[in-house]
View 1 (cartoon, rainbow, N blue to C red):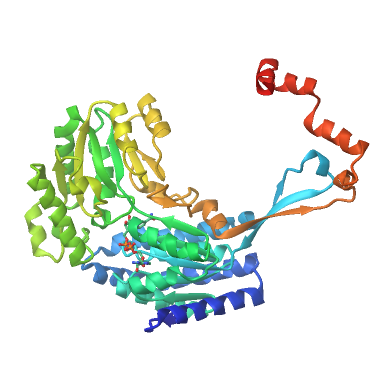
View 2: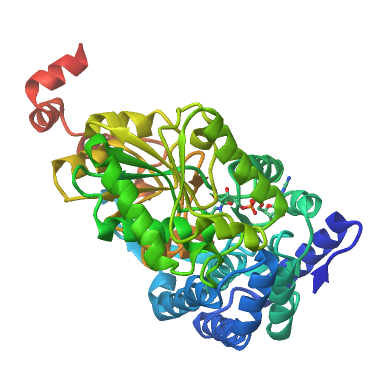
Amino acid sequence: MTVVHSNPGSDMAALLDRQRSAFLKDGPPGLAERKARLKRLRAAVLAHRHEVADAVSADFGHRSQHETELMEIVGVIQAIDYLSRNLRRFMKPERRHVGLFYRAGSARVEYQPKGVIGVMAPWNYPFSLTLIPLATALAAGNRAMLKPSELTPRTSDTIRRMLEEVFPADEVAVVLGGADVGAAFSGLPFDHLLFTGSTPVGRKVMGAASDNLVPLTLELGGKSPTIIARGHATAQALDSIVFGKLSNSGQTCVAPDYALVHEDDLDTFITEFNASVARFYPDGPTSRDYASIVNDRHFERLHSLIEDARNRDARVIEAGVRPEQAAQRLRTLAPTLIVGVEDDAAIMREEIFGPILPVRTYRTMDEVIDYVNARPRPLALYYFGPQDADCEKLLVRTTSGNVGINNTMIHVAQDDLPFGGIGPSGMGAYHGIEGFRTMSHAKGVFVQGRWNLPALLRAPFGKLADIALKVALGSDKRRSKVIGTREYSRRLE
Ligand code: NAD
């Protein structure tokens, strides 16, 4: 079922009611049913893979079939397979420790589906960022309502048609529409809401979810720093940075946003960046493997970031083969380096989300750490260089959603790692067991055994309660031994 009506709020609320009633009536699905749903989803994705790649390319103006299949279809299939393989283990109740007085009983955690999960997705990887959360929701035994992006209408419609073929509307439903529909969607009383998108919209979504105290996962964006250790601006490092920066023309939440390069290596970095871009795109920016910018608004936004930097006397370097040919193709922007830009320039304050890489120089790793820590905590941080004391210091002293060492973006493809940001770059995580647990309720269950010692410690209290207190808290003498006499005396003062 699709909802595209003029009064999206009430239609969506009715849909949510339907899904919740069906969930409550049928009860939580077992392992076999969850695996069957994942299998159905897998088959549908494979059957529609070419259609999806065509739709994405039409939505962007141009995006390579390979890029969509490698970065979206493969990601979804891998996630489904990982979830199916590990589901039995994830679903197993966990035995937990029981305190001294309660030993005759047992404690366990049961992972229970939350019910109906809302999923809101952005346009940049419109397929995988809708479908991986869906697969996670299904694996955890939930039903789901999806709200894909309005900026990729063909892809969103393909997702709708594909899912309608394999799931009844009370199991999985797709809601189409723009910001108004998104606002109404985020105000629904879901059992959990997973939002992927920008930090400003994430704030609004959190506000709307708070009205119903809906548990929320926010997968947001930000500026991911890329740090190159002194002497390590190598061809190999630059290939990895160019891969991260120019896949999907930089329209990637975990793309390297800016580079911090040792001042001695600046010229080498520029030369190697240029050489790497030429290797990746031998036909220049009109290469079939180089993506367009999704719409005019974003294209103009990126141009104005470059203009602002140019007006501040930064060096603007268009890289690779025949960059001027970008103008010959719809909304195509040549890979661009910005060198020597001030920190208060727009490009150093806003998430770039395009094929532009500002480069800033540093002298010491302490300076790098201070620079990163003076800014909002990023979604990803990348480091190129040896795993030495400087690398360790950077890892320990900075906080980011994830870290890539001597690579960019590959951490997202690790099914067993949690994926998420922190603070302005996000809240909570999915992928890995964290995804399953995000969409499950961890219910603690205590079962009383035959011998019920705590029952002897109820009012009216007597000698037994005194003994129990002594055992639980220890005598003064014993306590001083455990925590150290001096420390104990200090605490008593
Ligand atoms: P966006 O925030 O504009 O839109 C995301 C979704 O929110 C869309 O479905 C949209 O229709 C909806 N929406 C728009 N306005 C709304 C409102 N007022 N209330 C409720 N919903 C509303 O994001 P975008 O431009 O589609 O995507 C780009 C952003 O997403 C970037 O910041 C990027 O870093 C981030 N992103 C993050 C991840 C991640 O996994 N952390 C992945 C991809 C993209």
